[in-house]
Image (cartoon, rainbow, N blue to C red; front, side, top):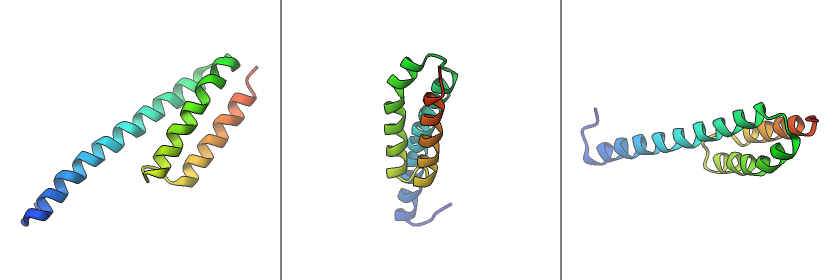
Length: 84
């Protein structure tokens, strides 16, 4: 347990940020799962930009690594392209 006032505040802030980041990550993961289950190409094309935007934001805020975001975007675009 931290003893100094600044360390106590830092711990509080870190916990808030951790929960906020976790929510954003889980939310994006749910969107990805929703896209992966789709069989209709036109609907998948509609939600793909939203997911790409979310992945970019996560990478920009260092919640996920930028290469991780790039790999996921590439994989999802290939998946949507191959839908019939």
